[in-house]
Amino acid sequence: MAKDNDPAASDSEVTKRTLVREALERAGKQPCRVHEDEGLHAVTEQLGALPGVRTVAVVDSQARLVGIIPMRLLLDDLFLQVAPEEFLADLKGTEGVEEFGRLSRARTAKELMEEPAFVTMDDTARDAFARMHERKLEGLPIVDAEMKVVGYLDRLQLLQLWLKQHEKSD
Image 1 (cartoon, rainbow, N blue to C red):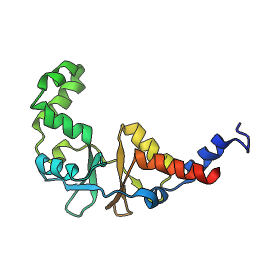
Image 2 (image 1 turned 90 degrees about the horizontal axis):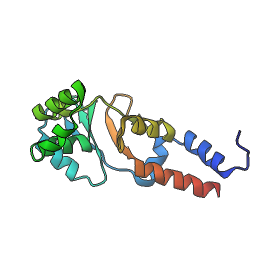
Image 3 (image 1 turned 45 degrees about the vertical axis):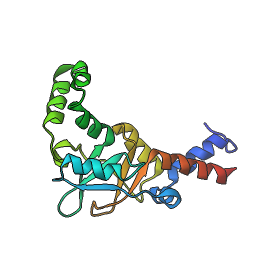
Image 4 (image 1 turned 90 degrees about the vertical axis):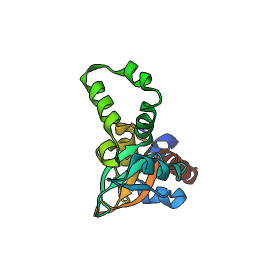
């Protein structure tokens, strides 16, 4: 059980209760948003134009989030043509073969995307970290009640938020 004067315990409690909106006040980032029918070259160009963004938000015709493309997955797809032996060496079991097949056939954002992962402005920093950690993501789109992408939150912003809260508690 943590003591009331334990700084680590107070930092932990503050971060658990801190909302995503507070992280954006310090260093908001523009999200990388692409339509599900866009080609992967266009996706790459858009992501490349937003340094620091590592997760693409894929949206439908009503601009609602339908999936995500982590930068690592996009790079895998792009470099599959350049260095296929790197992928072939890692093929283990049926899942690896299926993923290799999916990557080799993907031509649009919809064909490459994964299930959506996101946070809302009212989620906590703890919620955001848990989702990033669970899905091995560097960042997440932030959505509103209609699933429209309104922002982007990444691990660096969570670190900055922790530092900001730590300064307050000192």
